[in-house]
Length: 116
Image (cartoon, rainbow, N blue to C red):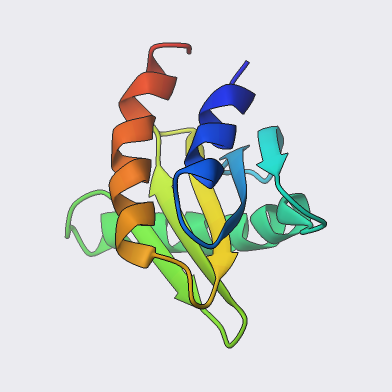
């Protein structure tokens, strides 16, 4: 159902390897991978961090979490909140186009919301 959106996301961002729609409790909704990356395990593990950051933002009354980024030596993960229950994540190489990933995620969320 959401795979076409995820595929376009990966294909339109230089260096992107995978995209995932996931519930905040770590349950995968849909994913697309252009290689052998285990995006589901990455999403599941980082969903705990997303939940914690979302809760912390609420406690501190700084507004709702919209976006988060994790950069390692080999990988950039860009997370975007879809709604109270779901988030999107795109995984890319460390040389990937981070700015374009943020832009394409921001455009993709409203399109995906139409399908809920």
